[in-house]
Image (cartoon, rainbow, N blue to C red; front, side):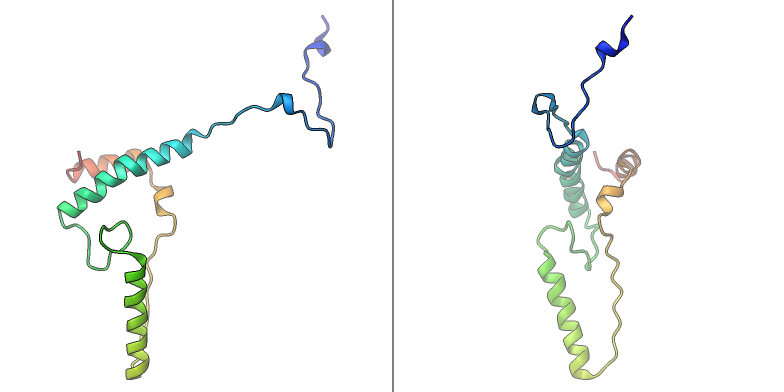
Length: 116
C-alpha cells in the first residue's frame, strides 16, 4: 500500500496555502467573558448587599473609580510633602488576579458565603 499518497502537501516557504486555512476558536476567552458577565456581576452585587467591601476597595466596586484612588493617593503625598512628614506606601494590587482564580474552588467558596 502506498502511504505517501495520503500525506498532506508540505508548505513551501514564502508560498501561503490560503485554501488550507482553518478557524481556531478559543473557548477559554468565551468562558472567561461568561464568568465576568454572569458570575462576576452577581458576586459584586452580593458583596455590595452585605457591605463586604472595605473603605479602601476601589477595583470592582460600584460608585468608585481608579481616578478616586489616584486622587486620594496624590493628596496624601502632597500633604506629606507640605507638612514635611515622612510617608510610606504599600500597594497591594493583585495584577491580573482574575485570570489566576481556580473557578471551581472559587464558586464553592462563594456559595459558602451565600452567593446563589
